[in-house]
Amino acid sequence: MAFKIPQKSSVSIKDPESLFRDLRDRTVEGLLAQQADMLRNYMDHVDNRDIALELPTGSGKTLVGLLIAEWRRRTKRERCVLLCPTKQLVHQVVEQAKEKYGINALDFSGSKHQYPEADKTAFNNCESIGVATYSALFNTNPFFSDVHTLIFDDAHAAENYVSSFWSLEVRRYQDETTFNAIWQIIAPYTTENDQLRYDQGNAGSLDTSFVNKIPTPYLLKCRTALTAAIDNASRDDESPEEYGYRWRMIRDHLHACHLYYTSNSILIRPLIAPTKSFAPFQNARQRIYMSATLGEGGDLERIFGRKKIERIPAPEGWDKQGIGRRFFVFPMRMWDEVASLELAVSWVTKFDRALVLTPSNRDADEVKEAIRSLPATQSHSLFDAAQLEASKKSFTQASSAIAVLANRYDGIDLIGDECRYLIIYGLPESTNLQERFIISRLGASVLFQVRIRTRITQA
Image (cartoon, rainbow, N blue to C red):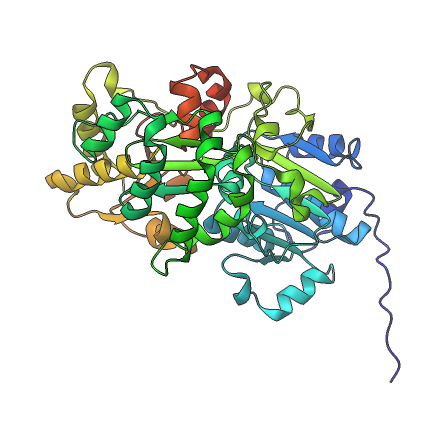
């Protein structure tokens, strides 16, 4: 029996906008004006290596990214992957692609050893686009090692996901032996006040905003001893798994790293992620960064380690359009922090479901304690990020539920009656020690004002 050679489609797909009209299984009638404008502007930059698309929250940037990926796959025979910050967002994008837009996107969340063979073959043969997490790309042996087009969704939220590949954090509560070993090495280069904070340990009076840095010349003096201490820790079977691969990425490059410390945590990382030395990222033909806001301070370039990224701003007039009515309440204008939190939590009973976003796990624990202490909310089901990761249905179908998420300002879609009440507890000023150091010790908070505003807007 002779092989049948598939015939090319006669439908014109000269650009992503034309492709949308060719999607027969979509349930969305048409593109929004700002989506069509962005796709047309993209065609003016179609051959650029690094492009940033500014698509504010609620403007439909997921569809724009999927259309660009599918168009490049079909017309250029490229392997295209859209990257999301979390597994929950991967599931969400794949579900939308198939059910709303008629695009066959493949879900590559989780371990690459669990990817279905059929999906891997389809992706490698450019038969379908892929959707995965940032960590699926930024690891020591990624499945996506030879991708032509990389599309980063929620690029403004990518800093920790990208930089963590070249970062080693040792937490006192998690591995006190290694933490103490490193502290003894750096102690001669710390101040008396720093030593006092270390001696206090987890004392309640500890200044939780404190962070300091070992001056680089001193770090160079003690890097041999540091290397030996962390080598010993990474060989320990009981040490955290990330000690192995993250330490390998920076072990021979401590001269290019910085060491930040508090009394309970030590972070070793370069100032800017060295993505140019990472072939799966560097060798892509095109990298597209989709962000709710691009800013003018070079924040996106710092996050991804690029010298220059071409920007396509939001369509003109978008800032005058609304995305729904919101009622904002600021209880701390009248009450202190404890009373404000109790009041905000007590209002949960007026709604079926509520979402609480906090900047850290410590803050999340405080919120959970407040929820458990109030009689009106003791019967509410509590959800965390892990429970929402696979599916949000268990949360959205519950009649009295509260989800408390730490540092998750990255676009979980809770539409309409799925959740009507949001508490943003604490300002998302910094999510790692380097950010905290730059803000609190260098007084350079202006560099992160756009990032903070974006996190709140995204929330």
